[in-house]
Length: 143
Image 1 (tube, rainbow, N blue to C red):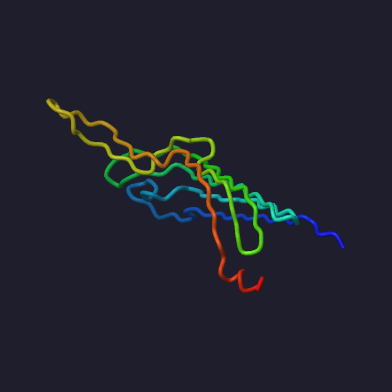
Image 2 (cartoon, rainbow, N blue to C red):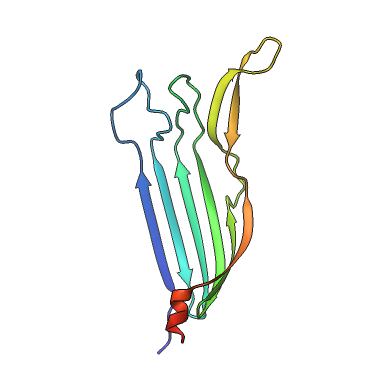
């Protein structure tokens, strides 16, 4: 009997589905939609790959100003090999190095006139790494 590859799909949807607002606009930090999806592929020999995607709509940063984020999407990738209780994987977060703001402020800070301006806290840039792990629960299965 020949083993076949296993494909798993994941989907998550969220959003603000309410009429509650502040002064005629949406709540701060409440995007209109948020969607996550992933596909995972396992080969019989122990190799696997997973691609995740996360999309988020624009949102207001605070109730006190009209500054909003831009909508964006991020992709993550993981490729690896599992043998018995050992797993090794190469991964990348924010695969396409998207520049996005997680937080925003609008106020005067720069002398001498202190004009109001936008200050943004950016999200994490692309990160790449290797993970090696040993699963004690799986170790028991192979004893």
